[in-house]
Image (cartoon, rainbow, N blue to C red; front, side, top):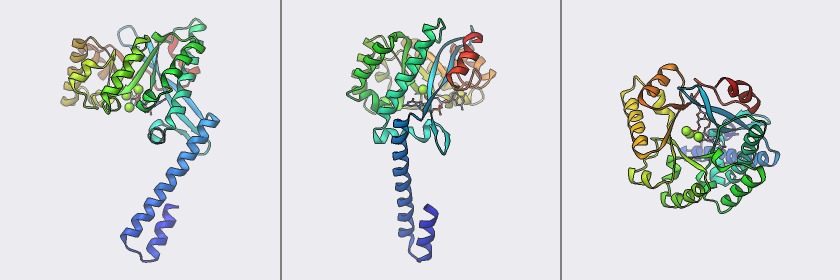
Length: 285
Ligand code: C2E
Ligand code: MG
Ligand code: MG
Ligand code: MG
């Protein structure tokens, strides 16, 4: 469609402005198509959850897992969240998606506990838009109750940059969630410019060091300095800590030497379907 529109504009000898606006039309068109197929996806439940282990590097035991959404698009195949979560957030469709994620992941984790297995803590990514929605607390209570899910099994991850958009509103809502006994972690920590004074006020119990810094250690001096500073910060504020994006032994060793013990990344396991994590990680980790 885009090519055809541009070809037409060129052929007709129109100026750049016309050319540009044809491209804009194509983009808007693509967005509308995407939005309607996302709507369809919610109705047809075309989503699937993958789970990635979080591991204590000293004991090699799994401490929990993060649920990560994928879209099994009927034509385009498996789509990663970065391809559709931003649009879902803009359009408000994220509310329905994250609701499905909560219910599905909590049901799975509960089933493991009921079978006598120990999946540890379930980390869920929530968009700020979902968190601040007026229906959110009700959905959360309903999920805990109908599934029989203990609040301390749950950890909600909110990115630092989303939290910092409206920090005062975020604090009020996060206080309510914390009061229920649910853990809250700051995702992608180090990329969202939170001031130290807010960090002290936010009712969070864990920092998740962003993978961009982990990928840089130990060679990149800047990354190494940020990782060390974050570890010191977490320690002095009494916060738990996890490193994300750990891909190799060198990174793992650096983290353990500097006092970050819990980690997540390809080194320990990629995000995988439920049956697979049950087979691979419940015994060996
Ligand atoms: P995130 O929460 O920071 O998740 C970490 C991302 O890093 C995941 O990408 C994961 O697959 C990837 N990753 C994990 N270990 C490694 C590693 O060792 N190396 C590298 N290069 N990457 C690693 P994914 O699954 O594509 O998710 C991207 C983002 O989408 C997530 O970032 C999260 O912000 C968002 N997201 C995922 N699932 C959901 C969801 O259910 N709801 C909402 N609202 N957002 C979600
Ligand atoms: Mg996350
Ligand atoms: Mg992250
Ligand atoms: Mg991220």
